[in-house]
Image 1 (tube, rainbow, N blue to C red):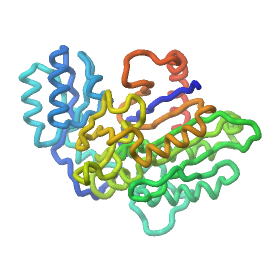
Image 2: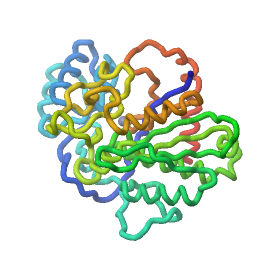
Image 3: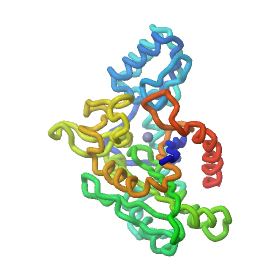
Image 4: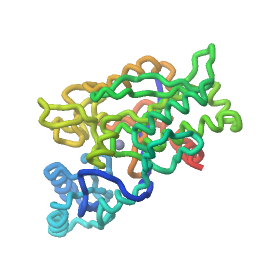
Length: 352
Ligand SMILES: [Zn+2]
């Protein structure tokens, strides 16, 4: 079976006024650090692990390389010390974000009106809390019930239902599948907004756009708008930059598994951590988490028809190709590279 799998990373903070979170990031900074030598790389890698720095780019610590940029969120308590260390080691750096909290405070979020939402007034350019997204799912399902169905993928640890959309015209013939998940990382709100936008665009243009009309006859789109629902809710109530899910670990002494590190693909080898305090904690075993189990089960059902799997993330404008644990090329590497440019076009197309 051959399919193309990508991670799309969207740069993005939608800007807004005011949010309400308990954990604050006042004084945290994001530094752009460019180590020049293997020794400087090693130093930076060790520091990142030791201080649990929040690496935004590259995706994993092992991918920091000489001459490459590393974008690192440094907690306020370490900012001064970090800069001193970088100067001492002659590692060039610049401040990318002066104050992370100030940027967070400018995000554009739904004001969570008490009344029911409507599709006509649904604003796709702001972030929505989970209760509004659930309502939105219901409205979409009802309005476009001839071409879209919603299905239960499973439940989260906090017993919230995870739904996925199946979009496509019914057919007697077996159809190819394009699979998207969004919001596997809780804090990546723009990914969740992207999936809603994607679904809206496909459905709104299903009759007027010839390409989409044809696509819906030939392909079924499986879309999970929010996979890590517990984590997403937690980012709204408590900790904006939470990344993992919320399952208790290690007898309840810490919480959350990085779902993107929980799949059985060289599980917990490269770019993951077996320490449950880590933000890239891989979980106690492969597919230990309910969200992961749900994806694996659905994947098994449709994989023989799978054309492409896209996991939508944010930060940076990257298309990451599997497999991340090795620099060796996968069997269909050239195919993935050749199609990559079309994804850029599709992304652009759906955004305009
Ligand atoms: Zn992510």
